[in-house]
Amino acid sequence: MSPKPSSFFLALSLLSLFSITFFYHHYTTAPPPLKISQTTLAATQNSIKVYVLDLPRSLNYDILRKYWALSDDTRIGSEVDNEFRKALLHRDSGKLLPYPENPIIKQYSAEYWILGDLLTPEEVKKESYATRVFDYREADVIFVPFFATLSAELQLMINKSVFRKKVKENEDYQRQRIVVDLVKKSEAWKRSGGRDHVFVLTDPVAMWHVKDEIAPSVLLLVDFGGWYRLDSKASDDSSSEMIHHTQVSLLKDVIVPYMHLLPRLHISQNQKRRTLLYFKGAKHRHRGGLVREKIWNLLINEPGVIMEDGFPNATGKEQSIRGMRMSEFCLHPAGDTPTSCRLFDAIQSLCIPVIVSDNIELPFEGMVDYSEFSVFVAVSDALRPNWLLSHLRSYSEEQKDGFRKKMSQVQPIFVYDNGHPGGIGPIPPDGAVNHIWRKVHQKLPLIKEAIIRERRKPTGVSVPLRCHCT
Image (tube, rainbow, N blue to C red; front, side, top):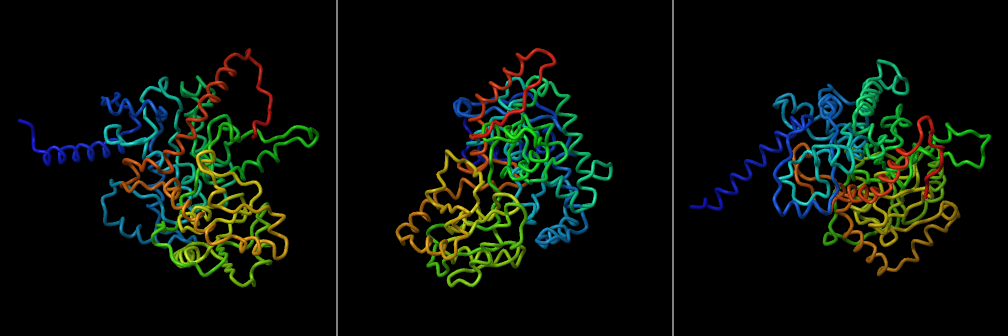
């Protein structure tokens, strides 16, 4: 006699919960492949096979535990994390931990959600584009589960003075060195030279000291800003005909979205917007971000424009929510790097992005057409007096409604959070993690070609430095 449906589903739920907990604590010891149903087999034919490199927990979840074990974080935006720290004192230390809410760190949390998806047992996964395999020889790519951003940010909190130094007091550098040494000793790296390895480096300073050693790999980055500076320092001024942008490229790397900091506004909740243009952020920036101050000075006293200096801490976050939801357009000028999480906050707020960043790279291009919901403005035009506001006022209500309608359709694409404790559990099929793996999947033919070309070289022959840009 078959069991009652309610009993069956209860048993299945308990099994799923047990599986998630088991994989969270023991994922570095690869268990035998799971039995997969015919339905799952059909789904995996349209997926990417990922092997999770065996790294100790000290390089991922234990870094997260160290962060929460700190007595305090005095940086801007850390108030909510300090409250959570107090609550942790009365909890079981073995429970799954969230990624920090401090916006300085949270915006770079892709590493947490991607690993959480990979550690979710296949029998409870629903529509993940990545299928975990337990033999690196069966994998399309090798994922390196290092929380590089959290490692860097933890060092900046504990001892910022040694962050740029290769010394034993720099715990982030020591972790970087351990990761690279372990990875390069693996058979998977030796087989491919690291070209099929995937690193998450969302923070511009993540793995700062070893970037040149992992440059052949697939890098998941929010933009190329920090890498351009490395290339310019390494370039030889005497060879002016050579483009020295050799470490990152759209051909092998993937631009990923920041984690948005503001909640999603559904199109049905949209109300009349009374402000033409809104911006909240730091006025003074460096390098390419110098344009921000010039635009600020042009717009600060213009009617219909709100320019607010500040960062989204507890107070600033509420200001940003109100400002973006009450404005037709949200300004996105270049900062220290070409992009920021502000763009994705605007999308979630249905505030039409005005992108003034000539060198910007955007996530999921080819899958998403940003011109359908964003306004792109050349820096030279933005700096012309009266030009920008006149241009924005030229858009009709019908055009702006069309932008917001399209924005509402792409909002889910930029969402990482899967709603599960510790980030481990089934992901939304139309979310950021799946789109990242689809973009990596597009790189596979080029990755395989690069590996084959490397193998046929005679011993002692090195690859000449070339620009692989698009």
